[in-house]
Amino acid sequence: MKHVLAAALLASVAAPAWAAHEGPASLDAALAQGKREHKPVLVDFQAVWCYSCYFMASHVLNGKEWDDLSKKVIFYEADADKPADKAWMQKWTVHFLPTYVAIGPDGEELGRILAERPRETFYPEINGILSGDAKLSKLKADAAKGAMAAVAEVLETYNLRYAGSEGMAWFDTLPPMVRNVSDKDKRVAVAKQRLLLLQAKDKKDDAGIRDAATKLLASDIGCDRAYVLDDLIGATEGQPEDARRALLGPQKAPYTSFLATQVFTQTPKCADQRSSVLTGADLEAALGDTAGEQAVLKQGIDASRATLHGDLKSDRNAADNLRVYLVRSKAGEELDTLEKQLIAAYPDDYVYNYRYGRRLVEGGKAAEGLPYLEAAAKKAYGANTISVATYRVKALRELKRDDEAKKLVAQTVAAQGKAFPEQTKKLQESLKS
Image: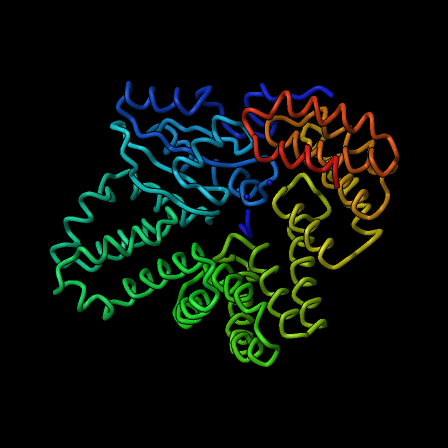
């Protein structure tokens, strides 16, 4: 989930070609059906370029547990590149993919799950949410009576909604007798630090980020260790080298242990291998250890290859992880070969043609990259047409085909400008750069 959120223009495509499940035509229709049938709606916010979504589709959202769950809910796959679904993401403050939001028949949010989960974790979580016991109003009432588990769960709910200030404001409304003993509860203390970290990130307060992240990393935060360490690394970028090493150095040993015990194991506890690997590589790079950085990446490469057994179609999440690790390792010809194989393995998606074409253009090979981008454009839709068009324009301009670039920008703006005004504005500005 390592930040996970980016001519015939196919904005009307209903869903990406790889969508795993049939469902209502729109989220509005899903909510209406849920109300009509007195069923909760489970919304899966995902996208064709989301590696964590590949993991969930192939490893979790299937089998008997899925069959049992699908009988209890109206399931809707929301596509982050479709304007209508993107609007719901903004309305519900969904920042990362995948995010699963459960909505009751009355329209009240029952709860949400952020990021990928192993099967044995996902289904107990979602069934707990759907049971009705997790409704926020009931939890708040229990919290006010001094139930620390309820206090923690409410704070965690605000964290999942990225509502740091709102969550801490709610905490301040609790009776003094509850607030004064709350830090004695480890779960509550961690939940408060998470909200303080969110607040600091919202304010771009690096000192606040460093303080909250360091305190969180001293706790047992499980698979979130990669994300919190990533925040700490980012907040130390402006520090003097000695100060940065003093802050990050103590994180190396616990993070190495985290990788060994929760990521690179026979049955990983943490489903998001990519974020764990890239954060580990970032930590080594920040400490100036190039050999350590490459060693972490090699662990990721070896683990992905072991999972795939030479078959890129067997596990798309592992295949895409391998691609990213090779990009970070600057693998050259090996990466070129893999990307062409991914294009052949997933011919119905725009994404691999786009990524390979983009990389060629960024590497100064506009003539080689343009055909791949044009192939991607034939399958792109919604917001991703703008991403593809951006690099097509770059390639055309480098090839001195400015009239074609201008025409492409005009077509893209006409088709997507209303739904994605900020992105199309940047596309127009690219003609001036």
